Length: 211
Image 1 (tube, one colour):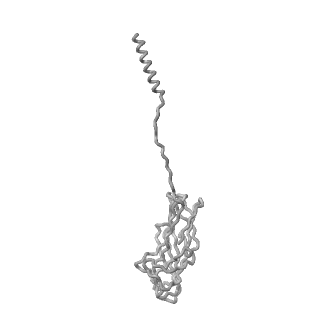
Image 2: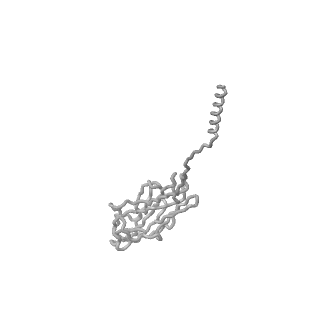
Image 3: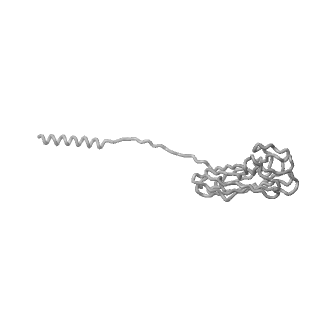
């Protein structure tokens, strides 16, 4: 009789455990979502700074040229300014910003770790107007300064973040005749009188900068 009772108890316990095992378990877990925004292809450029030059009053000997070159076609490249033509008593003025090639910065490229195309247009015969940069005064009469700009190299190397830099160099021409009233600051002052630099992703995205 005791054995039958014990078997009955064990059977009841098994049924209870089986019922509990068959019950529906529930639990919860959070599910979030992520997204991001990336910049489109962007291009900005600084100005080509030919520097401030000491030039004597003169009416002969020909024009003076100032040629800017860079050691590397990126932001780390150093700029060298070389004079040519009529260099008599011509020297770089002290106390002003040193001559510096323009630096163009690309962001938002789809071509990480590649080289993308660069181009320049409207870059010859740029005419200068008066300016007060470097705390210079405006000239009483503007001399006929002109400049030809050029890319310092072919293309721009894009890094893994989709960014890169390249340089714009050029040649400044100072006319043969200089009078006292010509001294002062000069700049190419309007978009219509500026070179246009363009970068193109291989996915056909383009952007331009004027300077």
